[in-house]
Every structure is written in C-alpha cells, then in structure tokens.
Length: 324
Ligand code: NAI
Figure (tube, protein in one colour):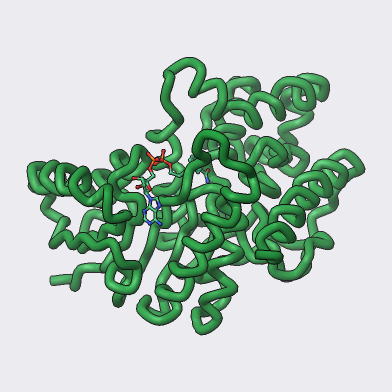
C-alpha cells in the first residue's frame, strides 16, 4: 500500500476550501491510487465551523481520505507536509485601508512562511491562493529560506483558465485545443492574458481568430473583470472555479503538464527583465515534480507594455510590505 501524503489547507472553513477539500479527498490532485491526510488550518474563531466541514468530509466516506487533523497553529498544521494550499488570508474589512490589509497579510504569511521553513518536508509543494496572492507568496518565500527554490508558488491559474475558455469559444474549438497560452503578472485586474504565442493544432491563434480589436477590447477586460462579474451575478465570489484552478495548478505540478504550458506565479530569476525574486505569473512546464520556466519568448510592444504595467503594480505591493 502507498503511504498517505500530508496535505495542508489553510482557510479550511472558507468558501474556496468548501469546494477544494472534497476534490482533494476524491483524488483529483494526487491521483486515484494515492491516499492523503488532510491537515486543516483555521483561525481560532472559525474552528467550530470547521468542525462541520470535517463532519461532511467524514460523511463522504472517501476511500482515499486516510485522516483529518485540525489546528489553529501553522507550526502544527504544517508538520511533515508534502503539499499546502494557503487559501486563508485577511479579507478587506469595512473602512480598512489598503495599507492595513497589506500589513495584516504580511504578518500572516511571515508566520506561515516560517512555519513551513521549520516544519514542512523539504520536498513540499506550496500554492498561495489567498490574496494578494503574489505578494503573500513573496513574503512566505522570504521567511522560508531553507526550502528549495520554487517550493512556494502563487496562483494565476484561474485567470489562465478563464482566458483559455474565452479564446476557445471565440475560435470555435475545444478548450483543450488552445495551447501555449501565457498569463503574466499579478493576480489582479492588471494581469495580462497573452495570446501572441498561442496555437491551435500548430496554427497561430491570433490568425485563427483574426480579430485583434476583440482581443484587446473584449478578451483582456473580460478576463480581468470576471471575478467582479461573478460576484454581481451570484452575490458570492467565484469559489468553485478558484478551487478548480488550485486543483489544476497542483495536479499539473505533481503529475506533470506534458507539453502543455501552464501559468504559475513564480519567483523571478530575471527572465524578461522581471526583478529578481518578484513573484509573477509566467508560462511554465511541469516535469517530474519540477517547474521549468518557458524562456526566450519574443514580446511585442503591446505585450511589453502590458507586462510592465502589471509588474509595476507588483513592485508597488512589494515596496509597501517591505516597509512594514
Ligand atoms: P473566505 O473568506 O470564505 O475564507 C477564508 C478563510 O480563511 C476564512 O474561513 C478565514 O477564517 C480563514 N483565515 C483567515 N486568516 C487566516 C489565517 N491567518 N490562517 C488560516 N486561516 C485564515 O474566502 P474564500 O472565498 O475562500 O477566498 C480565500 C482567499 O482566496 C481570498 O483571499 C480570496 O481573495 C482569494 N482568491 C484568490 C484567487 C486567485 O486566483 N489567486 C481566486 C479567488 C479567490
């Protein structure tokens, strides 16, 4: 029998986790032959609600769910973990300044980075979902110097999946037919969905769609404002699709992406003129549990401008928390 993997999820009583946990326990990330132990992290006041989620997980009688533990201490929740989904973060409260929000999250991800540094397996794969995801990941990386490079990543996959679906629909092809899509930058309305390198069966997607005005004036803003559109329509945020994107990000990382590009928030190694260490959405491939950046792409003037804009926002966020 295969030993269970320990998988931590923070924000485990929240909306995204309410989708994510059940799919994890079903085997959607680690495969149908791999049992897991779920190590759930929440803040103390949310522990009673989390108890209800645990009851529901038990009631699913998932064959792969080997055990569940619950804690409000990251040092306990992250002990010996193989993977972590850091979903919990401080939401913006009424009258809260941006600076207060950044500083509250900086404190959370500093503590969680330290706990990962001390407690996680050296092979652990960590995905930061909680916003501001890129900057939270940057803070966690800074406080986990003993973990290998690329152990901590941030999520831009929801934007990637949104763009992929819109582009496939416009081109009139299956969603899987769109390849070499790249989503760059911050997980925020400044993110840049780049179709310049995208192909369908070897044919350039921009040629296939043939409508550059649609790309600039419809596709890019639609993807950027999708979260807001869903909140307006549903009265609630896009938790199920966010959980799905987290599943996709981790599954591809663990099981490999094949030849398909994925977009991941990664600490910059200086490619494309990105400042060293800045956690930025970039195209990548995953093989044998490792991440390979897609390097050397030519960026046209439009792409360069869009990338510079989102990077400027990331640097501003980083500067704001670096002061704290
Ligand atoms: P939610 O508010 O329903 O749940 C968040 C949970 O995190 C709450 O139960 C809260 O108690 C918990 N939490 C807060 N501080 C914590 C801490 N220090 N340690 C552990 N748990 C803590 O929010 P939801 O809808 O589940 O979203 C979670 C986060 O994901 C938000 O920050 C949201 O903005 C972000 N998000 C990111 C996306 C991305 O693409 N990167 C996409 C969608 C959402």
